[in-house]
Picture (cartoon, rainbow, N blue to C red):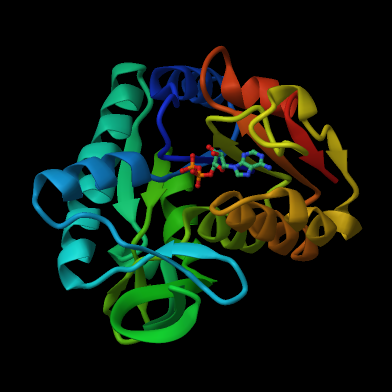
Length: 267
Ligand code: ADP
């Protein structure tokens, strides 16, 4: 089993990702796709007059503050436009893809965090009304059911809280939890960069290999949202996934290239 997570940043070539996935799926490989949608969500939120609000925790992690209205916009884009766009591409390529959010069948479950600590103007504030959380449980039974019947699952946040409330979760860490739960042999985290860069944005500074036990030491090179990917990679390898690869989804055959070792390989 290979879990592929493709991000939602500008420049990602979803046609290339889907064509590569379809070829490998048709050749008999077991795959699941998890996707993001942050870039498009930001655009739609602006257009709807509810611009995104990003908050930075005291430990330096950036996340989207998700009030109820933001959650609804988030669902429109992630579960609607992005998810159905990917499912349509795969269907046109002859793959019977099924698009689901983590809320559907409680594929991704976690605890609802209603408040977030954020640093604003040098002060730590507590913001309430947040709909976020972290994936703690994965409903592998539903995924096995789909896979064994020949369907390729295409998954996206939000997740479900234990009370059944939709929560915004980080897609990279959700994909990591999924890879662990399914005992995947590899987790690919594909984005609009060649991999983890030692001196972002210098693409010549690509880190090629990271020993599995040392991943957290590389957090220092990752800024803002890249930190979550490094954290996800650490969680995946700690959970028994043998290889995590940060790969480039901007062109070519992104899945095959990453599996062949292009990008940053954590193993
Ligand atoms: P996606 O939505 O595609 O999953 P994110 O935007 O969450 O991706 O994270 C990838 C982004 O992280 C890159 O586009 C880049 O701007 C940023 N980044 C920060 N630090 C680094 C780094 N050291 N190496 C690579 N990218 C980095």
